[in-house]
Length: 223
Length: 402
Image (spheres, each protein chain N blue to C red):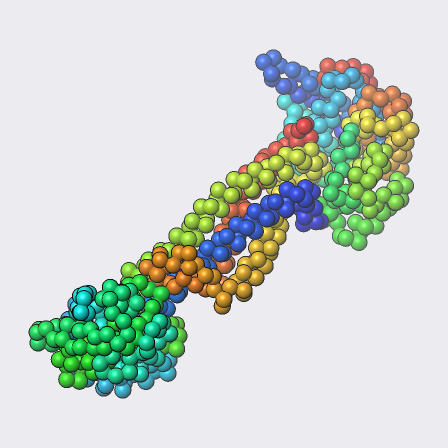
């Protein structure tokens, strides 16, 4: 079952000349696939991720997530779609600093309208699965980078999305934590059947994925 | 959770938020202070007008207000007084008002003489509270004059003066008095021009048999003015004019209303200026966490919910500021409402205005609600552009923001 499908997906920027950040990408990702998107800096990894995640609009082409075309969706509908179908993991964790780890993860379910008791149960379950129960009451400033990224993963998967997009999730982590984070994401992908697309140029990550898509100058070079 | 998030965002930079809360609190207090002082002063001016001669309601023959001619006489004032039986009436009395001149051995000045039944005037006016020398008039030949007039006439208690005025036949008529007392009301106008004499002496000067040219009524409360006035108009008929104090001094009423409105408008203008400062702080706070807004947008918060979050922060700031300002205002009001604030330093201008130098702050609950509404509007105006920015920015723009 295809979770992600792109058709001739392109993103151009005009800055005097036309810069093709993503150039005619055709890509499909199946349910539960654990894939790395690799390429040098400036190759268009993040832009492609943003386009697939519906947080950026393509200049040309289409993006289908779970069979639904999202490139033409109005912003409000798209926001709702992201809330239910997608999860994001960022390089710099990007947890909300004024909320505790528990509240950061709960936020997604709250915005989805999940009742309080169910929220508590689901958040605590994911904390347990990721082995971060002791972080529940800590704010991001009281956590290490590895701990923050674990909480960020919890936030990305607590609502069991179809697709998690991770942009350089290990870039700010030491080796030990980087490997642990990738293993954690892989485990979640296998156990929950969540599709992961991880933009990275970190060999510790792509060595552990089943599929590697190489992108250079906005085009898929190898798959 | 949205409220919790907004609340915590608000206190993310404690110092900045405290400065903002203090600024709005001070703004609210300043508005409350100036408005309550102005309202208090206006109330005092009106009370002084009512208590130093005008009363709440007056009865004259038709046309007297327009042309207060001594010939316009109420022939049977006692019959009318007997008809005034409203429960809200505290005192009602007849008067002979005279315009004329007063002579002392050294000076001559224009005056307005109130010729009243002295024991009733003691109840209806507050002249007896303002005695600075001598005593309240008791007998026919007594005259009670203001401090400024006494100085201009160069007379003191016990000195003789003569009032000259037109009588009902159009001839000049004079009457000699001895100064029994000197008063000093909060109004310079009254202290300079108004004298109090007995009804019988005034009647003699005017040449009336048993008439009067004014019946003045004091009520238990100003709120009954309209009711009492309407009843009297019905019972007395068209030959008499029944007027409330604000119909007698329409310009004064207009001035007082304009003063109050100007004060609120002035406060509003000041607050609008403050709104720019508040907006600047909201913008700063928004840009500081632009990446977080990007994250929230990315994970699925709609633009509307993001702007709602920014609005909630400002609303909570408004609530905290109004709460703090409200407490401050309440303490100020409870402490000074009956003690008053001594503004003797401005006594000359306050005397001209007629409020007295001690001002007792006064506000109506509706006015406080107007102030709160004004501050709410200012906060909303301040947050409008930050909210708009938060709504318009895309997730990608926000996530790229450095």
